[in-house]
Length: 125
Image 1 (tube, one colour):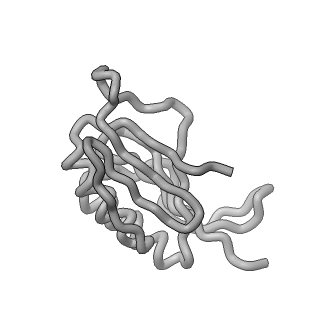
Image 2 (image 1 turned 135 degrees about the vertical axis):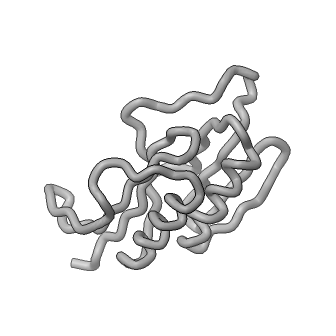
Image 3 (image 1 turned 120 degrees about the vertical axis):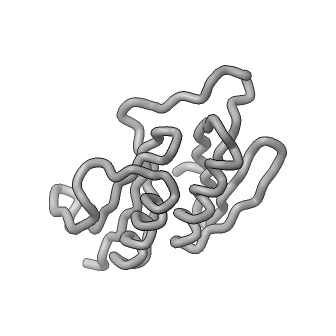
């Protein structure tokens, strides 16, 4: 459905360090490109950027950016890397949840700029 998601950051070098560690747990690596950094997978791209309009970066209230994980252990590694590199746990601790979408293993963080991110593992039914 989406080709990419891009979020604005206040400090590109600090944000890159955070996302290198967090997204590295999911096997994603960075490709830098003039005031932007992209993390590409076969199914889409996540990018961080200094806002091109020169205004301060801001956080979307109610926004969450979810990343697919291959196991609960990978979700836990994502969360641990995030907390170790300036992220803050939000919502419930990492773990299983059941609801209308079925059984999911999730972990939520706020990145150093305040963006809400999540790693999600969905077991095969």
